[in-house]
Image (cartoon, rainbow, N blue to C red; front, side, top):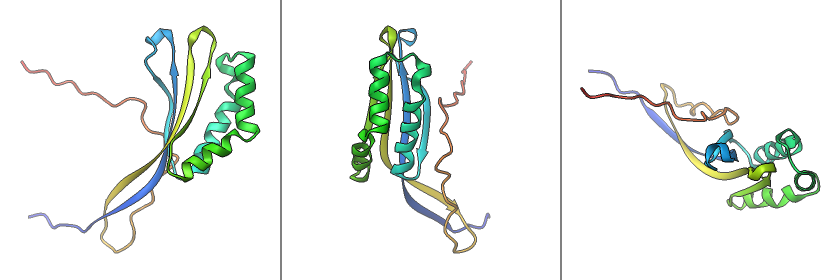
Length: 144
């Protein structure tokens, strides 16, 4: 018989950050660009601000470029940070040429970490900046 090890669990709060691209090539089905869980609302809003400042590579119209820089540099992000502190989601959308668009979403989440420990020490911290996989791995099982 296998000895049982003490199992501990901890409930943690994080912020799911996702950037999605919609376009005619995919039938306007969302295509993940960036998916990750961040530890604090400040980190999540900072990631969004950095991406908005560098999004000129996506082919933004001049109007959308001004909107993005205004939101990221002139205080639009402050309302988003306040919403996250209240436990509410926030986001931002930009229209690109050709009907394509980009969306950013930040959602508060609670996750449970399960760990097996031989000592009474707390479980190891979750790596908040580790990216999530963009698509789940599929295994096909064929029945003959």
